[in-house]
Image (cartoon, rainbow, N blue to C red; front, side, top):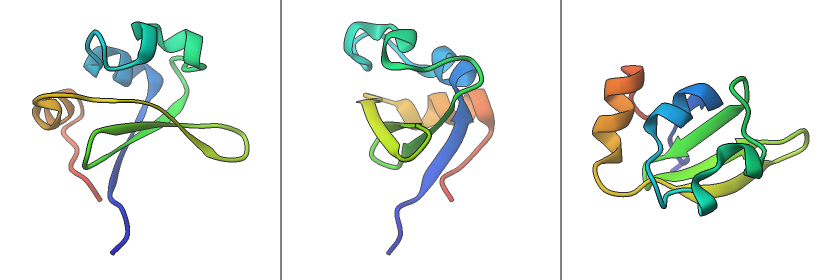
Length: 77
């Protein structure tokens, strides 16, 4: 079964992410800009699209599903 993701911008991720979910909690230090493409799987793993691959940069904790739905209105597809 293929993995399901919600794909969002770095700007939306900044509004969703909470302290301790990204090492150092500084998205720019891991390469995330407002217009970056990031995806979050159903387990809360956050991946940043690089030029040649997806790079895991952290993970959402707790009630992240409702935070994503509230901010984006999206479900996992």
